[in-house]
Amino acid sequence: PKSPVVLGIESSCDETGAGLVRDGVLLGQAVASSMDEHARYGGVVPEIAARAHVHAMAPVVREALDRAGLTLRDVGAVAVTTGPGLSGALQVGVAAAKGYAFSLGVPLYGVHHLAGHVAAAGLAGGPLPNPCVVLIVSGGHTSLLLVRDLARDPIVHLGDTLDDAAGECFDKTARILGLPYPGGPAIDRAARDGDPGAVRLPRPLTGPGDAPYAFSFSGLKTAAARWVEGHRAAGVEPRVPDAAASLQEAIADTLTRKAVRACTDHGIRTLVVVGGVAANSRIRALTEQRCAAAGITLRVPPLPLCTDNGAMVAAIGDLLARAGAEPAPLDVSIDPSAPL
Ligand code: KG4
Ligand code: ZN
Image 1 (cartoon, rainbow, N blue to C red):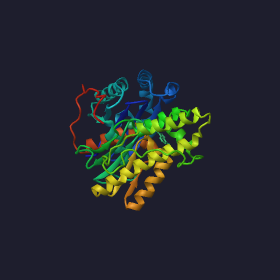
Image 2: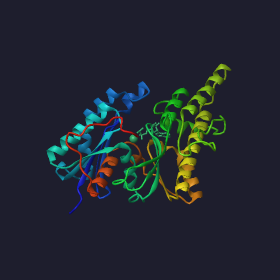
Image 3: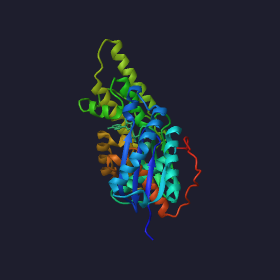
Image 4: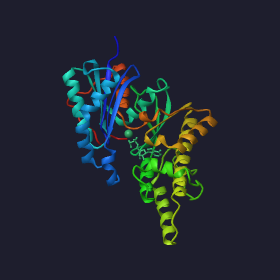
């Protein structure tokens, strides 16, 4: 029997996403973002995000179907992010998914947001090799994961951030430097004209006695803030590009060093990098360089598959459906604080 076309729905934060996947092949996807509506608040406002999902959900599903050349009748299973995420936002996606699954009479899969991010990497360049190490870096997560079989085995967390996520560090520091939100792309741009050695910033948790795969980024933001304040107190305008380049270098150095070490320590030949921060030009360049030097194959999916989207949810749903996993009951609940 042919595997089903899986409709994936994502609404855990500010992106409303729908995607269609069958047998590891992405058939079509669409995303709407409420990012612009949050910009003047400097961060995602949960109530605004939830309302935006209500408006965007049906049109986004329709657009994904149109792009795939399919109709709702072709959908053979539905997958939806149940957590972690903002509860009002998750609720909208889960309610929609239940409606589609019930009305079409097809199975429903409730999935973990993180499993979706990992599965998305298998939509470009063939299935993920088992096992692999995954570095997930976004505004919400910074973790090093050991992935064996996504559909059958739990994801092993080798290490996580103890405080801020890497994207959060980019965003908060950008704010301190007077750069626009979201801060990651702004810092990436500003850093082009900066000297990465201008500000001496720490490489947190890289000492001999430190947890080898754990991260900590809140100190970097504080160090950058002190540097700015020091300049202003002395009546000197801080050079924003220098601060941006130095921060970017500190984050890139820390992330890539630990990711490569996780691979070599565990004898794993493939590193996968996913999440919005994977867009960063310096992180990409340094990971490529260090992986090549260590003989590790690097996989970074195209950017639309790195950030939050519906295709990633469809991708994990497709793996679950093909593995014969137990579907979720139609009264499945959201799990906003699901462990990362
Ligand atoms: O995966 P994503 O779209 O959403 C979640 O957080 O789940 O990631 C968004 C994060 C933001 O913190 C944003 O500043 C960061 O990714 N980001 C970047 C770049 N592009 C996006 N950070 C550094 N450099 C970039 N070029
Ligand atoms: Zn995400």
